[in-house]
Structures are given as structure tokens and as C-alpha cells.
Image 1 (cartoon, rainbow, N blue to C red):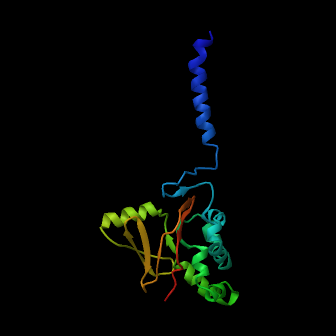
Image 2 (cartoon, rainbow, N blue to C red):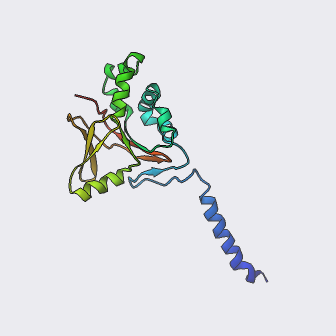
Image 3 (cartoon, rainbow, N blue to C red):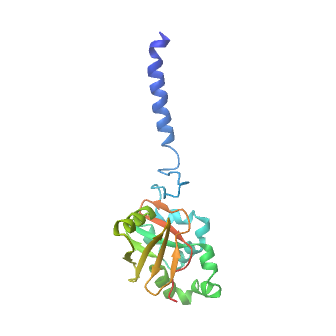
Length: 187
């Protein structure tokens, strides 16, 4: 009698394992291969707050009152300078975080924000499809151009300021954070 029920027990165990694996931390995927880590259970603002290597840009977004935008329903892609990128600005980077410099900080940050939900893989495919550079307009109204050398993607402003993608991207419910190695500011 026990042997008759074994297929049902095995089927129940398999269904249970599938259900348990879905109960983890949302829709997060392992991005060890360089692909985007996906967690659609939180907003872009929440995801950014959990990335310790991007704490300076997170603080800058809060200082500039842009965090509510990243908690909203619109989709955005943030080209997020790493903490090292902000540190490379020295005193000028620290000055940007003051109340007096808030309008300038907002302008700098808006030039790091793209409309839409773009993962690095999407940008790479677009570059390949165009057989070259892809240009997009930021929320600040400036253009940025994406190019690729091997697997390395570089983003360049109209004035020549550039940065390379420098870490694992994180996709949230309403946007994507793509770490970059420099602050894209006017030269």
C-alpha cells in the first residue's frame, strides 16, 4: 500500500520544494555571471538604500529630494556613481552635499537618470544591434552615449565626461541601478 502512494509523496515533495524556493527574498536571481540582480519586491529607492558601495549617491538623492521619485510608479534607470567616484571629487564632492549647492546637486543627479527600465544587458544588445554607439537623453536634458569595448560598457556625456559600468546592476520593481566608476559632471 505504501508503494502505491510513493508517486504522490514524491510529487508533493517536488511541489513543496518549488514553493519553498519561491519564498526566498522575492524574485532575486544570482547574478554571479555579471547579469543584473533582480528583486522586484522593492522600489528603486529601497534597493539603492541596501547597496553599501553606493551610499554617497543614495545620500545625494535624499539631499536633493529625489528619493520620492524613486519610490513612485515611474520607471527610471540610475547611473549610480560609486562611493569611490564621489570621493575622487574631493572637496568639490563634499560641497555638492550642502544646502547651498542643492540646485547644482539636483542638476548633476538628473544627468545620471534615464527614463525607463534599462538593464545593462539591454544597453549592450542595443549597442550590438546598432553596430556602434547608442545615445539617450537624461532627465537633465543632456545626451549620454553608450559604447562597448569587449564586454565593458562606457557612458559618455556630450562634453566628454565618461564612466564605465563598474558593478552588478540591481533591478527593482520600478527601475534599475547601474553602478558607474565616475561622476558624470561638466568638465
